[in-house]
Length: 370
Image 1 (cartoon, one colour):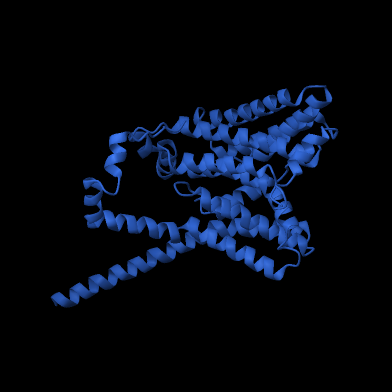
Image 2 (cartoon, one colour):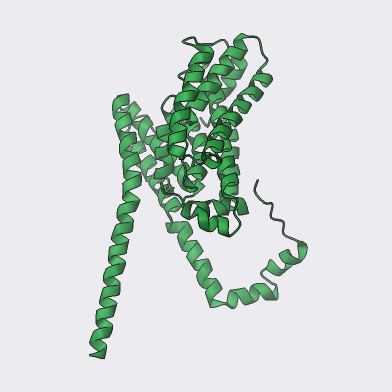
């Protein structure tokens, strides 16, 4: 769990702008340069670029696609984006540590199937919710244990559990579907906040986003995750519990996937074994598009949120334009490839530019000494 940082009264007093220490910091050139660098990164970093890209995407779609700029579009777009948005939060942290979880959609499907069977058996909704969350904990813990305790690659482990959890979902409910959930509950999951078109469940989604944002950017636990992605040996050397951190990240993907399974079931009022099939690719594409490095060590929650909304906006705009789902899959695949290849190409260009500048500097100094 993240450490809680508490600011004592003397520290707060020392940090006030009028205190002598704050004044000394203001006069320190290095401190001013550091603050300027942070402001520049805030406006021009990968997360900020993705936010600008999201605004540009929304503007282009609104101007070129009929009926895109409407309250109805806002509601349906967000309802479609919620599963990807929720799973992308813990997935971003998993990828930042250098791992991946491909079993998230199958975990949601297993949760949905179990929910349908328990409801058909006469269980109450609160008890069903508890069981579903526990299923998510067990699924995530199994992935985490195989990766951190046994030492298996997360790609191989989660490909296996992707098939395992989907197969268990089929065993649990078979080819049947359960659809007689309480109308009040299913209506709540598709209801909107007043006339804004924003789904009511977005309140819970925002809580999930804030939780993982604070965890990654404002806690000592979260700040250690990029270090694990860069080098787990170096992170262990400085006292980071690498295995424990990765284990809890896999548990978090399991829990959030279970919540998505509940949401999916009640939104569509249907519990089936194939619910949420294939959304893991959209989640990973959104995470990588949002600036999280596939090699670990880098990423931000604002960038991932923007990445999810960009993919969802493009998909919904194409749907409004009558484009088939096959083309949507092609677009998702292209975004996935582009989000992996583009940062690598940028890094290569930067390295070559830096090498050329260094070579010119050496030649210039040699000419001066000649």
